[in-house]
Image (tube, rainbow, N blue to C red; front, side, top):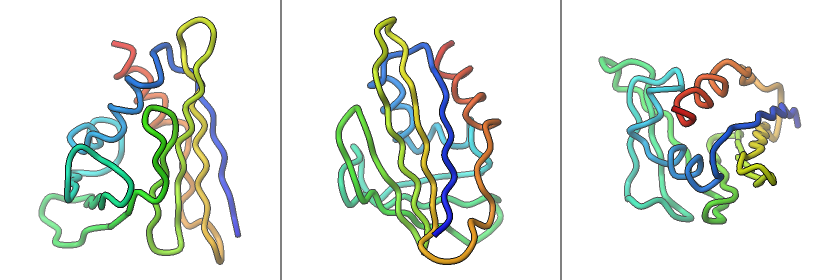
Length: 126
């Protein structure tokens, strides 16, 4: 099992960040995906997310919400991969966001970097 752990402080309440993250229309704004969709909205435990990197592609990557604690924490699980977002409120109204991605077997093929999360921070703080 290989893991990647990232942390960032965002100057917004955790619920605002949580709602932004789980809105599939927002994903192309900060992630390297062209489109994302869900099988239901609002999102809950068991919701299926699909995204693709190119609008002309028929290849979709699928993730299921495998853990859900409204406003605080959620996890996406896909083929041998999972990523968990943990939002912790800080005293000054900001939020510490922890991102833990891991694979159950083998190496993490393309570990996340801080770049998309810095972009996310700019978007939600505007």
